[in-house]
Length: 145
Image (cartoon, rainbow, N blue to C red):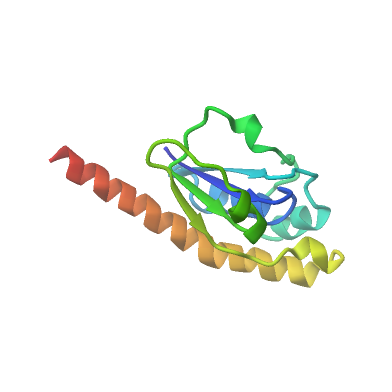
């Protein structure tokens, strides 16, 4: 199973929504996780706007990278600039990619802003993860020849 980690500052909005989106749209192909550099709590508006797509992240909780120590990831995606600056090194052939999204938590809980960021996450990250999964699969096939 292809494993992806989404890294953000607080693991409250963007990385939580990214985890939910990837686990929903790429179920059975990819397992997504999310953590924060400085974990806090999952924002209620993130839970609400994800439920509009039929994706339940109400059971998610904000986590630190320490909680996933020892896990190996195929892909790490930093979704905010602060997380990119503080992103640790990952072992092996883990690929690290940065795609920055605005923090909807700074919008004073505006559902419109959360939806906009949710949709941007979906529209950019699902194709990105699909492409990386395909690359990994093709690389594995060429290594078997």
